[in-house]
Length: 384
Image 1 (cartoon, one colour):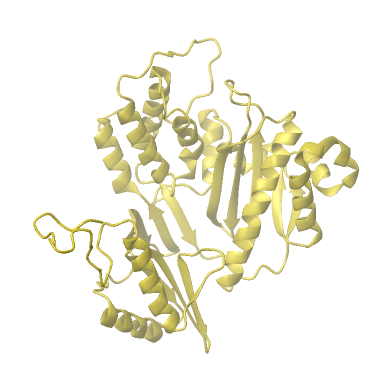
Image 2: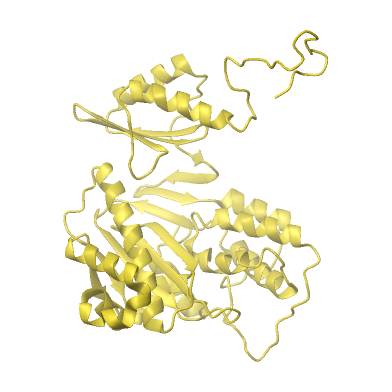
């Protein structure tokens, strides 16, 4: 830091000002703000969640309060309204706090209360993306991505406006927070952000046209069972450029979809069994984290979490040490899954490919099959 121009001390030209509090906009300002806020909350009896550093939990005398922090936006809930009001009063005494009442919009996610629970959507954000792209009045498409046509050669000419492509791709990535039905197509689009081609932009336009026809779609949150269950799948060597596989898995808490992932695997798998086994390992890691988070939210999972897989060979590798000689190069994954099975945290269950919900996260489908899987993901319009 330097002395500001016009305020230089001629006697001490190398001295700097000592700040009594952080300046807004400096790199350390968010860290100082977070430390000040959380230190005050810890004085009130809150503790950090071991699973999510932005979640603080208060558990005393039968009172449970959960406070989720994103920079200067808070989400507060709990089982005692009087205790929550008292907490907000204490926060107002220390910070310039604006209380917005019941949740309706948080970080661009619209939360609508229904007679069955809540409905999460990003309709306003999706509309903004279409307006920015100039596709406000485009024709709607029935699916976000079409199956690969090997008969037609792709247009590999560089796209004329790569910055627009990157901006739209990044926006679609945030939109997929409440839209698992576009997760796979968005993942494909985002893989070509460095040097997009005309074919890549054509795929992006297809995704935008699908969003046009499903602007109000989102995820419902309803009452029901509190047991976790997971579906895991992989598409072997699906990327023709590097022959890497795509992993996909999703987790439900009762009837509600709460977590999903689409990711290209880091290494090339030698077989479809190995590809699905690696996806199984990634799903198991996610399940362990979700079980820990659920326990902190007092939703303790009494029984092992079921991971549904449609590949019996991958399940056999996880359960049977006889297969060890064939899987030396994935030994760490092998030991991890087997340990979690033996400890009773997870159990594997075979499921037919026709019932595998995670399929929609790994590959494109025809219109009828896509809509069937989309309904199983619970992604729908608020009036459905």
